[in-house]
Image: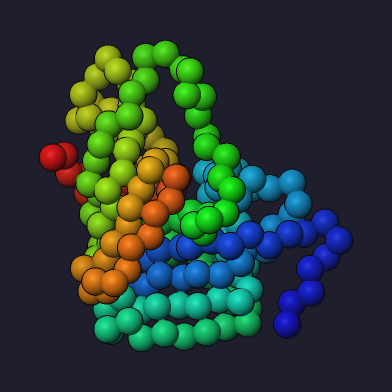
Length: 170
């Protein structure tokens, strides 16, 4: 079992890949803000996770467990701090000229009902067209999976790879 160094911490997270959900505790430096880790220049090539559970979403929920795993960051399409953990949101609610736009995002077999923070002066299509970021924040998200009907995860903030998901409006 991995022993934390003096300047390290673990934070429970959920990582989404094309055909799996990974739940574990990510090992980071004490000073790292885990909720936005993948948007930073210091994002690791591999997510170092301990006490990990993996659910394969394309095989009726087959489960695997690992004491320690190194998950390639480039395979992640969604990421958030686990439910019931404190999350510091990445925006100022008092910021003017911004609004929360409801979206339904399709992330392979995962369906996300949430909100996207965009300019109040533009439409969703224009906001997405000028988007030049590898990771995008969705807020007040509820995540379900078409193959796992009992799965329902709620999180105040979720990072997604915009080039790997489709956005629907209702």
